[in-house]
Length: 179
Length: 461
Image 1: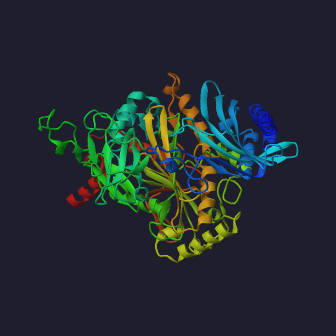
Image 2: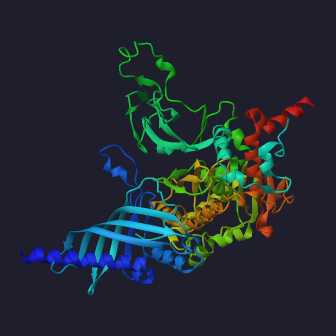
Image 3: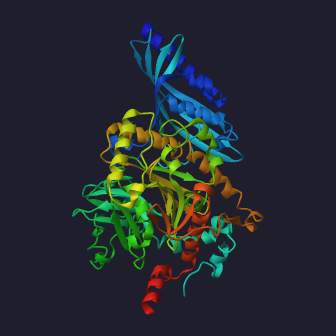
């Protein structure tokens, strides 16, 4: 294999391990560690999805920073969400949910400037989130994520996350957890 | 015979003399089925906003209670609301959330309807129907009444219902608080793109009652108050001016509409708000000044959560949203939440408000999340045979309301509770359920228009 292909393979594997480690933090409720993975200027966006006519792809999603979305925020609000859970009186997460993040289909879309010494990468993955809370309340959320990761020392920071959930009417009563 | 809310089976479940209301009205599936017929098929329901359908052929798929409906503007520019169901075999003729079209074509057998609802095309009309089908009688089913009020579209399936504004009664000025601009100009509200739709596992009356003016559930929101989600980064809202205002519960008797509202003193000066953004703070300071220059009592009123009977909730101020509680069955509700801004506000102000709205409201809303948890498990824990034997109590503040409330020259309609000291009352909920019981009992709208009976009785004297 050429050097470039090896570099991309290694980079893809490194990123997959990063995403698994991130999922581990969320599932183990290590939310402060998770916040430390977020760049200070992170954009965290989850549009809503409309049923539209074939080919009308631009109107399928609500627009970032224009329309109403499920999430469209930065680190300040994400931090407040974590702090709210940590009050112990956020009733929608008290008692806390049991959550598993499955992450798969990790694809490296872009490495800047290149895969040998990347400062930034654009990646795509699939998620399947299982949530079970109180007694029998159960949610299953499936979709795609598009992340921009930024090199930070030996590790990575999440600089942008776009979350595409495959639902129209949200079939979950709340979104008290992270994607 | 006047309806007094104390006769018959349903009134027995809603016992206003003792302030007790049976859990059956929330969890009983037979009552739910009757409710669809007696409440939702006869009530004025919110369908959408004209700004969603600005051009001929524009449509927005909406709901009226359990039913799917199409709000659309026909080629001549007229607004219609149709049942979204083909007259032949019932298939939905529109399964897009919104868009523009010249025709709604049923994907099952191909019947097609114009945007005015007329049945335009029937495959094999000559051959299979022998040209004998009366197409003029088979247009899309249209609502009996429709009212566009300051951009909002309301509709009613019942031709005998009173006009929308008569149904609103004294509540019109509270609805205006969400539809008029913050500077007081009429009908300046603009809908942000995107309607939040989600399902909550409880009867629709839990949120309806909460938004009627539950000022008693502070503990629900203590966590968000601690971490802060408000426009100035603290608490849930900016409370500065509310501290000098009279805090009131207003209930419009025999209409079933009720709200929290704040009335400012006559000589009140604007207070600091929206402090985390200088530009946004300046916009609201300017609007406040303009508002005070305008004649009319609404310049001293500040909107707060309220409910228009049966299933529309208003939050005219912080955040400025409207929610519709669509029943799915006795145990599930589909919420549709719409968000408003001033049409002429700078982009930066709209962005700031949108950020605030979605961190406050909806499934990701740090405030609303905790409400839904409570409604969910209050409903669940009320379904058992034993639980159903014990009615909920709505006794708070019984007999302490006043009519003809006035504060420094401003008269407030309906029955008013001054909450400035009392903090809470359950008069709004009693008003909601009294109206609900009247709907469940009454066989006709003539019986339900109690205000007309009084006028008639006076005329007879």
